[in-house]
Length: 86
Image 1 (cartoon, rainbow, N blue to C red):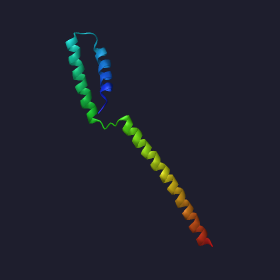
Image 2: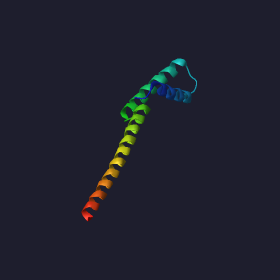
Image 3: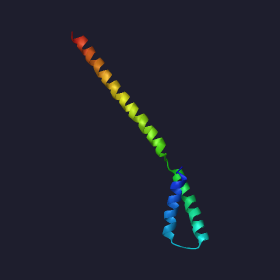
Image 4: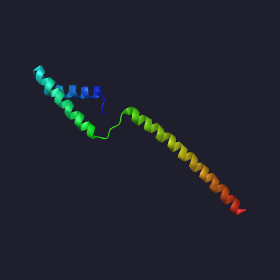
């Protein structure tokens, strides 16, 4: 779910597009837009910035580990070829 501050910001921008009107009407429009946005965003597969950064770190560590293992495999293959060539 999106942070409430982001939704409030979107609501403010959309409300400004509707111009000045009676306060009650603006409040109703804000609530309706908020409900629409919540529904739209809840159907999307979104993650927070914190979740994204955490997964990025995991991926970077995994990539480094895979590269290290690739080097080890190359070294083992080289040593096996050297032993079989003797």
